[in-house]
Amino acid sequence: MLHSLKGVVKNPKNRLISCLLFKSKPYYLLRFKRQKAEVTRPISSGEIVSSAAELENELCNVASDASEKFTEPPASDDVFATVEAELLSSDEVGPPLMEKLGTFVTNRFSKKLDEAVLKKKLSEQKRPSNCPSLSAPLTNPLIWQVLGAPYKRNDTRLTNAQINISKAATAVALAVEHLHDLKDQAPSLQKPLGSLLDAVSLLGHTHQHLTAFRKDAQRYALPRDFKDVCNVEASDSKFLYGDDIKKSLREAKEDKRLTYSLRLTNPPSDKKRSLF
Image (cartoon, rainbow, N blue to C red; front, side, top):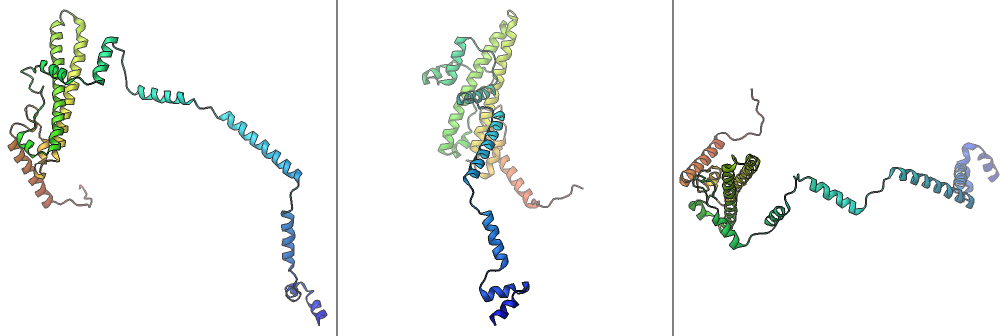
């Protein structure tokens, strides 16, 4: 019977039955095993050496190509010098001053004056009677009472800075007047006069900037209904918010009430409305 079964499985269609009966591996498994053995055969030492030589040659070629394209970066000192030069070049400079004057200016802008010297210099610069704006505006007493201690300290410092700027502008203005009287005798004074007038303009701009900054700093200490008083311009007054502070506060409160009423009657809508 076994012999008859072997005859049956000779048919290629019955090879799987043969494998099951006689516990032999199928043909396709044997073929896969032979192919795997061919692929994973051990590599000889000669092939390893030749492959290593080829890899070394390839790496040398890549390194030579990269060296041609690569430029050596500058030394660290050169990098710092280049960056420093770029930063310094952003500040446009003119021709140098004479040595003594340059040293004097550098010292005055890098070191503070002694308190006694500062008071003396400030007292020497008397404000001209026809220049009321050459002074630091004081905070209105009614507003000063509302401010807390931190706001008062901050406002005092800013006021002192404005006083120093006003005194500096006064000194420059007096120098301009003196040189103007001499310009007929020395026509070359025309250019220095222009420079001094530019100094007055820059000092005045900084003075106004500090005034606006003081108001913005005090805005947070004021009640909500009176914050708009900080928007009032009072350039000709000795007070920060003008001479008639009560009127300014009433107007600020009225403006706040009207704005609130308009928002209630016409609430803002997120929908986009056509203009036509």
